Length: 358
Image (cartoon, rainbow, N blue to C red; front, side):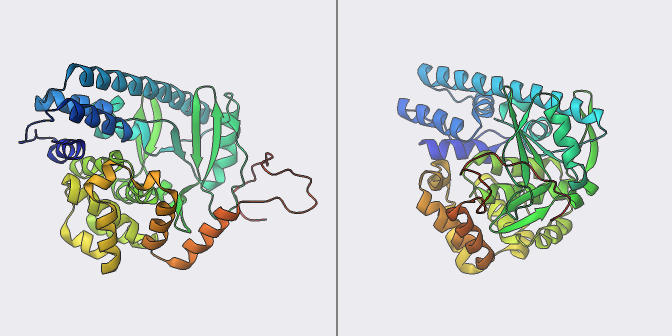
């Protein structure tokens, strides 16, 4: 069994064990481990292999254990940064919505450190962004240059020795369009994490958001598709009518289809057929997506390795061509300071308030 088939077989069968035998050759085992690492699932694959009673060669098993431990160590650092960030935000009366990352893994995976996470993603109301930025700066983080008034901006980046915090005021921007975050914040549900008050997207919003995020990155990490499968399994009474309605309201229903279709087709994610039909793009885009997002191509993350192919795929799969072309041209040209400002290319620019355009 090759690496593509082995990884997909494990994820497709979960939470059951695969009927097929595991990889037998030394090269196949090494390739499976490298694929698991590439897709942010080293810890989970180690767990799933033990449950399936699949045996790797000693060298491959040692490599998987090492990578799983390294991923867990990074996850612990992110968890610590998240905890400190929550403490700082609580002090100014801000309870953020946790996006992706440790909070998602805590709710969906057997153990939260089995899913790789590299940064902290928080969503706050637009009106509280600057308050939240100042609170996070107070704990030693530095705000990166950026202009939150740009149409294609959706978060403020704050960095420090312990890692990166992305403070979102829009849920996502992609394909030349943006999804504002305030409505999602209003529908979020209260929870706690390590003693901190937090919020999570309601399940229907999370089903849309995670799919949009995955498709915005052309599904190049299988963990994102596996998240969808685990989310649907964790919420068997998910209101799919609301998922369809909210996906359409984003103006990006095709992106939601790309992710959920691939999760269903490759990983057996439990999504009703009528939902996929309601969100589906034109036939030619469905055919293209099925080709681009085949199992072997996704396991190999082929689009992530080829920038021209990446750009072509984004343009071809866009639900609306004109905003995507404008966005692509803007990204290719880059942002230059207006004449007479004295700013050098790449010089830091102050973060402006997202409360509205001036």
